[in-house]
Length: 510
Image 1 (cartoon, one colour):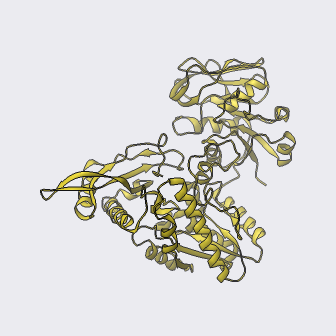
Image 2 (tube, rainbow, N blue to C red):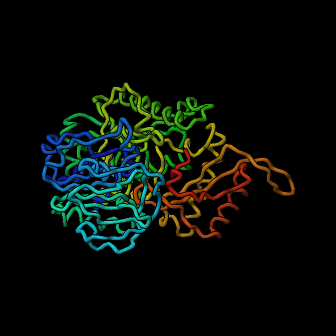
Image 3 (cartoon, rainbow, N blue to C red):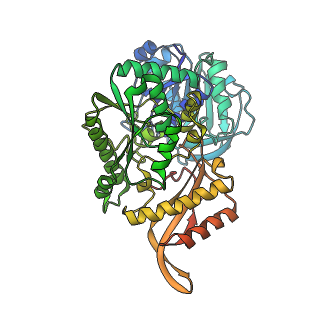
């Protein structure tokens, strides 16, 4: 039994980042709904609580709250942003609506020493994202941090292990955020480091075996990192009772089918390949709205898997490599989060389906799945692949999807990726791809006027997919890619480079 940090989620897009940071310290944590009762928390054996941020104002009529009794449990509590305001409000502090938001990087100063901020430099950069703020602290609390805008940025109780910060220590933009989280876990809550990728694998195998028993599982294999590592995990747990099925949806990259087959044959894992190109493309014909695309793809995938399952005796379960970013962007955690976009394997799932879903990675990020893959001895070539979205090229072919437009996108994408390999940049980048835009521009080629498609190239650095920064690829490489595409891919006369980070953009364009 692992020591447990419980995170009460108020709907922040950053909530799982808190979990990720905690797990980086080899401490087990779970995310639960914000209105969990103190009795339930106690029964779970939580050793500490974190109150997350959230999109709501505490002054809204339906603003999420906590059970007041959690402050009587006698365990350390850390409030982050909205969580700080909840704590201050409970103890009769004065929280007021902000006339001016604090958003983005700011420095902090420390009027009072605190174990929470031990080792954090004076003036250190933190990430703010709030409107409401604490104007006056509750009785028996101290101010432990102020922002460069001279607002209260941190508080602590004088005798109880209650702490709150107005900024987000979990995001990368808070330079010493990991130090703050570590201080809370070890200096305040006295945790041990007892949760690792190896222990996750052990626990996941036991849970899969207990869930499935002697049953059979159809695994939706895309060839990407997540589903591939899952295939190795499921094989370790239930052997040949896991049936990995690769569906060609017609939305794959150049040579994807052959590459996936080769990778798994080399690892002696048998996979089953089925071609459903016609079914997917016919359903997507003329569809331009991104959310509709994702839901169609999710539905057709399930229909395909259920059809395959009927051909194999004893299939009751469908295993998916769903990750937490898929879930949080689909708004599927607690009901407080804002939906950014539905993912085909979350928001795109039909309400009625015959297969029961197994998702061992649904609380993990991409880098954590890669760590699990290394524990399972998954080949490095699989672990090192760039992420590829489940809906495939449909969300990179903006506007209507057709075989002609997909052919343009495949050819251009292959040029970009090949060039990154040739120049040694592929492994320096978290994700790189091309996007075919639904616009045409005037160009000139061979002294003739052209009116053809615009193609965007994108490359980002990220740890978890929740935030990302665009990669500063050398200009000469970008120029080379552009030249190769417009000269060899018929239908493209202009290439642009996406220099937008996440936020405000997303990594994929749809």
